[in-house]
Image (cartoon, rainbow, N blue to C red; front, side):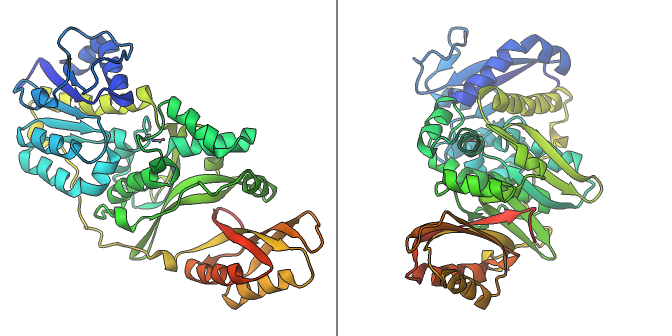
Length: 436
Ligand code: HSE
């Protein structure tokens, strides 16, 4: 069935909903000429119809009830942009069951319930587009699914949370504290509805779970992604990192080796020579190794209304092309599978280099106690800095280690914490691209 008009209903008129609507309206003519069909924004549903989003809509387009979109037989594509699990999941399943194509930016939902949603889409012969779910404007879903299809994908390192990167960048460049920067990111529309998702690494874990599933043929394995946020990072750590030649970034890391793949999100000391260390502000970047392509770095804005809206529109356009060509049955839907047979590696078995910061009494014999514990646990020290000289008082002590096993490091840290000469909890950061 060739259609000259494709009707779209957006559910959710927040930051991304507004960006998507703005692009669809502003680029309507160009999109029509590129796609050979017109994209008609028939409805936008949001419980809040009062706030002025600065977008002129025809009368009757903005509605309160999402059901009006789901029940309208003329709607071809439902765009879910409310986020969260409920009622987003029910809306999507209902749209799919009614034969409507769906586009979503909802990484939390895909990371938790992707299996069910993709199966439902396949069963009903409709598309489920999710380009906007990872890294905003960077077309990384297309890259991994389509452009790199001829590659065996190796390591992936991603800065995939704009808010966390914005905060770390401001802390690095201007020495500002953590709290006030988070407020700025929220005002700029980068942060999640619950900003703990950004700063505790949860949003990055959602995105890594989706990417890893695409890249390695794993089922979506959110629960197996090791996740640690950036809330314990202080300006002092940023300064120490720089003295060792590193930047601190919240990295999402996937490393396949043999029959296992490491999946982890944590603040990471990244050597300044790695291009990803220079990715600042709300920008995202994803480094992907392909056996044919070699290393590639994909870079762009990872959050915000227009960059993310642009990714949503790209999915809408893809679906429109298929509808226009009467080839909906040939659409390539994503099928989650465990085809690779890879397993997620236990964090205990992961090996990295570490940065350790602790507050220790400045007196003879303290360092030997600490290094003794590390040595006993198979951990070798690469370098060390003590800040200041305060006889018999606490000073900051920083160590970089050679590669060590996570399990050994956790055991050593427990023992170090018990030392009377060490106060507070030692901070540890894992290191990439450095000193092994
Ligand atoms: N809160 C997310 C971020 C938005 O800061 O990157 C885009 O997913």
